[in-house]
Image 1 (tube, rainbow over the protein chains, first blue to last red):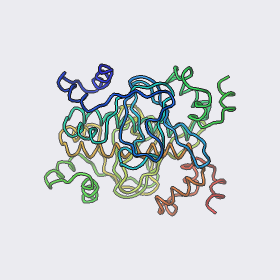
Image 2: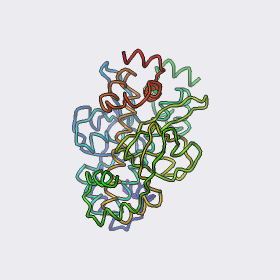
Image 3: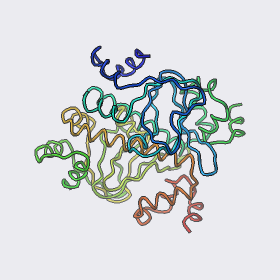
Image 4: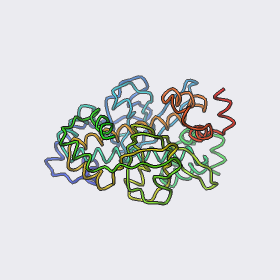
Length: 187
Length: 187
């Protein structure tokens, strides 16, 4: 578990054993069962999560009660309702386990403590923030300019294991199409 | 011009006169005429831009030649093809002036120089990156879950001046609807 987090951080910034111990002391290891929520809409979002193993979905439920999947988060991903986490407001989305999932949780206070006390971790967090931002800009582009069929093909090319791990209903919800439309795309 | 940039940065981190002079020495002031491109698709993206005055559109042209507006950037906004800028690849989008626009340009090298040599500017850049990320996550949510009518109303509520500054065709392109659909929404 610890080694996964260390390898993940060290892709960006090398750490001494002592530095990693300090970093690690800011995280809490949690395992959530399939179907459990890490947080639900309207709750305070106290943590950002690094996924060690398992699979999460970030969902938005609209006024009509329909569930939209904003993102899937699997091994080596960071996930949260970042708006609510960073702005200290209540969640507009929910984060739920598709599989039993182990995460390292980092609280708002520890996020900023790490950032302010360790220049290397500030660099790491800036890198992750950049990657999150450009990933989101790519997703906007994809939603504005590609067909559901193209989005389906992109998603599967980037994450081939997802087909085995999520239901067709969930895939359709991520792509913004009906279950019936997805069946036609995936033939 | 300089004072606008200083006020903008000082909303996040206070600077001494000397620090601001150092910051300013990394930027280049440019004015582009209406219709001019700051960069075009396939070009290298050397700069990120802070808009002092005017209005830009970030556009993606699909294979069929249709133009999609990914974002509008007005006074006090930062804009670029951030993927291409940060990853040093070629642009997938173009940045074009809707009005005559004055920007402070910050090159890739100066962006990282500022970040690495001035902790206050690293903090500022991290803040901007966070805001860009959560803004993009909100836009994804909006594209996935709201109707064109709701997106139109959100956009106008957040940026009332846009209605006077951009054409109906451009508004429709940003909202991802046809010009005819927009006419029905804006009645």
